[in-house]
Image 1: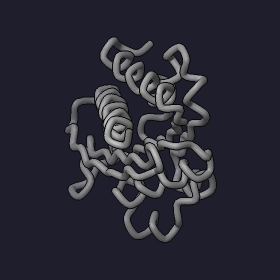
Image 2: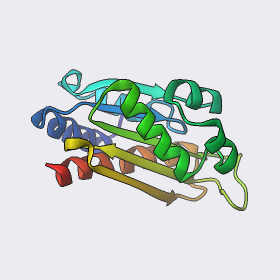
Image 3: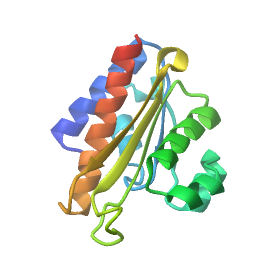
Length: 168
């Protein structure tokens, strides 16, 4: 289902989390569960992946992850503020150690001048003692919906691995 590059990245993250006895959760919008899917495709993922949240609508982000309506209204669903709130909310509701959150515009429609197709925010919060917090902005461009989602998964997995390497 996933290509070799994604599986290699997912395997590294799962193995690192298991070795550190840490739990991972995901909060996904534009990827629709692909990050959780990649992680749970790895044998042994049940020892480190406890939950994944697909929160495609603003209402789901608010109700499932406690993203504030004020933040959603002020910054929009595709923003660094919402990505961070999604990660923090997922971390809190799942009681995991590391949360990966993504929100973006995969296309082909839905973009604007301020928020073009291919714009994605990836947030990672947690790690050992929950000391890691980073938000990345990526502009993948109009490379197609599947390609934007694939690149988002790869970047999120890489950010998760970076978090575990830096907090160990």
